[in-house]
Image (tube, rainbow, N blue to C red; front, side, top):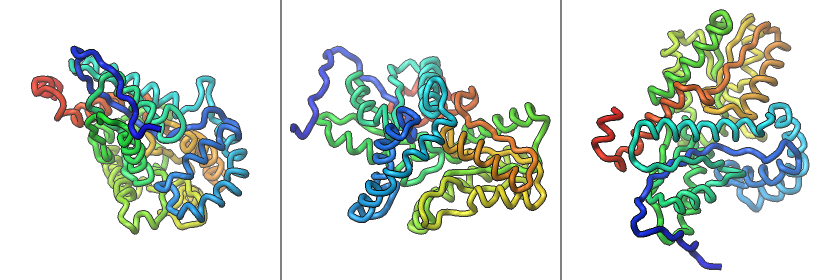
Length: 351
């Protein structure tokens, strides 16, 4: 097999284009154990996700986890699956489409906007091939994780690098590292929560901000993720005019027996209810699109935990999804990141 892929043929007069690729985590193709098995195998085989030597981990993964977890995960996916498919896939595709429209109105430079999934389809490799075939010699990679984590944004970088290694003629690559403190992103979150308050007759007694968790060991070894989450929470609380006593930060989606960063969301839900908090607003600022972790783990399971522990009113705030404020903020972020590749007159017009 050739070491390098055959390069796509372009007409000599064809103008070079800029590609924009937004990347989210991924999803199985269907809410079934059969579809979950290859998805989980790819996801849990990533050394960025599970930092256990393969000789130890792979027998556990293939002999135990892939024989038990797919059926349980399939039931969870089935509870949130839509007529159009996986919510994460639907929202990410819509975000890419809307981003293309926003950028098309603001910029005159030829752009190709697409989306990929780190695990599953459409893959990062497939989308990079398509962008190259479309004549993109510069590609901006936008991991849709506001807070940087090696297991998320870092893994996207690995997938991009792996595909670049197959190209004889490599495009220029620029990657958005994080946007945890981006003013537009914070403003879009605040607007979303205020809209939720308006629809529900005002604020609940308390606001819980739940972020995806990572192993504590990762933070101890230098991962900035927890720090990024706390900064996002601080900025969002300030934007909403909340005191530190009016909101709590917690971490969800723990996997395995190792200690993850605390406090755990499920523990906080129980404590708030037992401490007398009767009404709770729940938001997941680290997710820009609703998915299994928000719709099933938080909106369904989280509600059950809070009500069972004595709470009365549990209100989930949807993710940013296709909100105009978020797409506008994403467009502004992408435009700034493309600044080195855009004519100076366009930058002054979009400033």
